[in-house]
Structures are given as structure tokens and as C-alpha cells.
Amino acid sequence: MKKHFIIFLFICLANYTFAQVIKFPKKPEQMKFLVHYGILDGGEMELKVDEGLFKLDDKICHHVSLTGKTIGSVDWFTTIRNEWHSYIDTSNGLTYQFNRNIKENNYRKVEKTTFDRESNQAIVTTKMDTSSFKIETYEMNTQTQDMISAYFAFRFYDFEDVRKKDTLTINVFLEDKLFSFKMRYLGKEKIKTIFGKKTKAIVISPILPDNKIFSGKDAIKAYFSDDGLRLPLKVKASLWVGSAEVDLVEYK
Image 1 (cartoon, helix red, strand yellow):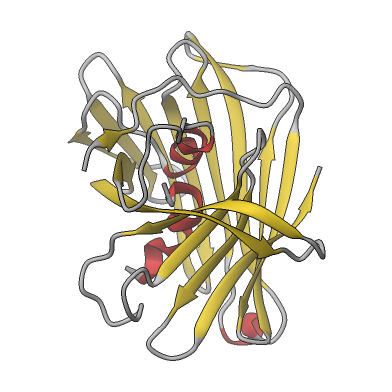
Image 2: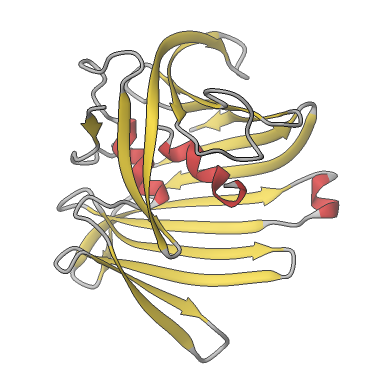
């Protein structure tokens, strides 16, 4: 559960399933987030939507990158420098390739996942050393996304017909597993952001299995701006010991 906490920021999305064409901003975007535990700032994340399109094999794709790192005193005890890259096929709005470069203390992992839509398989290539790779194949369904493309599928979802406490579902493949994430829609409320003003936000909460990390019902709440941008403004998490938050601190 703990290793997939970052997923909830971008997937925090009954009777509704995500199966729609992803829309993309007309201009490149950059978002910066601050992760903090109580008064302690512990990490930074940055999401970038690149300008222009990229060709992978015979696919024309959007490229979105996400980086995450520890900062301050947290960085003294545990060092994280992670990168994720999503290439989203413009023809169908589904991820085509998802790359991970993981650096967590002494742990290293370089991985590429190719989503074969014809065979409904995720082909995972893992770098073992400087000259060898391991290739494994996993089954998936037709609408499977990666953790970044799932956020964009949610970002422009039409909430007009969604009622409070309805459940939304999205399928995400990560590493070697297919996850079926269920999110509860909690309605809308005004929240104070780090930019100093109250903003109307859409609120959703992932439905979590029993665990020893998060505490109480709706332990994680994600807040997205209720406007055309649908920006991820904040994530709040109630832990068995203390709490954690992720705040949007810069957008351009």
C-alpha cells in the first residue's frame, strides 16, 4: 500500500467506469507539488506535459513526465529520486508506453512497459545490468491505463451525472500487476489553497483495503479544481500516526 501512495494523487478518481478519449491542454504545462508530514516538508514532485508530439514505433504520442524526490531532513534518512514517463497514443487516448527509473537509497530499477492493444498484453522490459534485460508479459483489459494517463482520463471526466457517494473505477497496470482502483465521489467544497484564496473543488476518495497505514473512512481525500483546468490542488491523508498532505504550489 505504501509504495503506491503516489498513484492516488493522479488516479484519485457503482456504476461508472472510465472509458473516454483523453483530452490534452492546448499548451505545455508544468505543475509542482510539495509533500509534507505535519509541519515537516518531505518531498517534491513535478508534472510536465511536453509541447508537440512524439513518435514511438508507429504511434504518435503525447509525452508526460512525473518526477519525485525527497527534500530537507527527510532526505538525510531516505533518498528518493524517481522518474515516470507516459507516452499516450493520440489515436485512442490510451497509454502506449510507460517508463520508470527508480532510485530509492541503494535500490535501482529501470523499466519499460509497452501496452499491446491488439493482444491486450502489457510487455514489461526490466534492465538487469548494463547489457541484459528481462522481458515478461502480463494480461490486461482494453481500457487499461498507466498511473499518469489514468490521471488525464479522470481530469476531464464529466461529473454532471455523477451523484454524491457514487463509485468510479479505473484499471491501471503498474510493475507486474493490474489494479482496479475504485474511487468514491464526495461532492464539491471550497478549500483554501497555498495560493491564498478559497477555491471550489471536486472531492474524491479512493476505497482502500484494510491496512496499517491509513486511518478511518475516506482516509485519503483528493481535491481537484472545479473548472476547465481540473487541477489537482491538494491530497490529504489521515495516517495511523499523524497526517500527510500534497499541495500544488506552482502551475504554468
